[in-house]
Image (cartoon, rainbow, N blue to C red; front, side, top):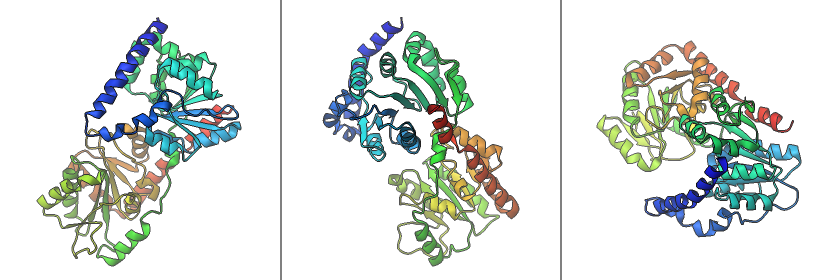
Length: 420
């Protein structure tokens, strides 16, 4: 039954790929298809083969997943004395992979003959799949070729888990070559253990992305100069980072309310998408807020809000803030990097939807370095409570740093498991 399902999947996959390409050609994002012709050889598994010794093959979806293994993948290849081959599903992922190894390729389409060809040409000594890239034909081809498969930084949504359970025979076939699953959380581990053929192969090693966090010096001198040249020097700052349109009216209202108890409190707004700054400006104007863009050459006196229209400055603003909010948590996004303020021992406020950063959010809440607030009133009350008690503010920042420290170590644990 599993082979029949794999055959059906293989017959449907080309049609799905064509529909996907057609969707992009007819969408505003059609520019993404311009390079399709140049990518076709690699998509068909015909890219240059890895020379020399059999490589460690790491497959990641896109740039984010490649970045997640930027420490782990080279260290694994070095520990095993093997070349490193990284495949990605996107051109941006391949470009990021090229920073780690000359053997950076686009992954072949998930068709069994293409996967067999790719494996035969590259002769990998193992396949390490990152996060959620569970392609049935590729996994089965690796199993048939005797290539051991490991899932690292593995996570699984409830919907995907239900689909794999419903397709039990196909799942069992695909997972037949999986030797071990290194899950991000115990919740992910439990979901993997319920899948066909994986019970007894799953352990929790944590999230590799937490080991990537480090302090960036970008923009620190510029912000220091800004503070010295404006009347912001010595003022308490509330930075709301990676914000989305639906969140900004809430955050502005929360800040204005908190200012009643802390009249000198400044607001730094760092929208997630700079191209829609005009929308943010409209909200600020409607509330009568005295604001200025970061790119302005002159900062008028009595400016209470800074709207950041440049990339790469968020960490530097977190560093000089008293309290921070991380966006993508009041809307449906699911949260951005909740731990960045913790790099500077700053307390972190975030909304109830932090599903994409669940582990970080739970650690911050457990250590009392993070604060859950879903409305303007709740955010304002949390800001005021922190600012009204300096000892409480400092302790909360230290607790945030402690939460970050508790989450590190996934790279070392994962390496230990794969090099035993």
